[in-house]
Image (cartoon, rainbow, N blue to C red; front, side):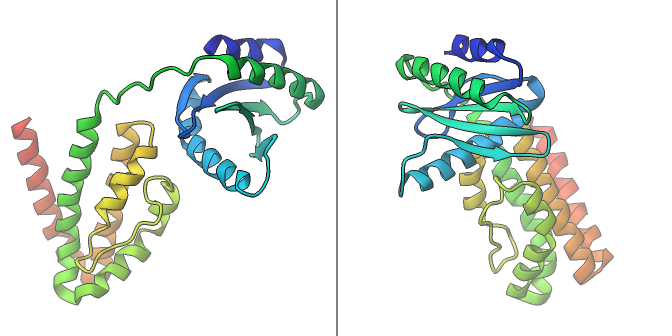
Length: 239
């Protein structure tokens, strides 16, 4: 399957890379520059969702998403979807011809069996660990103002939620001030790496600490940090 993608890129100028999605929106083959592998993983779920919404009312021959410097072009290929990242100046008629040829070949290509996540256990461990850290930050505010702390934490996390839309989609905060870890677990399935997950939850924790300081004062933040540092230290000793 990757040979088809390589052939497409080499057949004409303007094709930056491409990848193939299965029926679940998972990338099953790709020919992408290393710097774009992360963004490709993020956009794949969104393209899959949008395509399914449109398909519910009408047929979809092509879906184009423009960015500042390039465009994502999604084309159905049987039970698969071909997504091409192209330069904005690409020769459209020639691209249409070459991408249709690639799509026909992909229809006949055998879908590879999905590879299991090698580090699946660590994903759950990361979320469970940060749920504990979230609790230490949350209680410093919840113990003072009660359920209203959820509103403060939610508003204070806006920038982080916008920076990590896949991880924190539809995220709410409970009356104890903690973010909904069930939603985080579910959303984490859309991420491409544990590094991306760790970066997101670490930034969420920092936003909560900032909210604690803004609402309850610097001392409450310092107390929360003391407990968080103790938990991190104990975790390090057990590893």
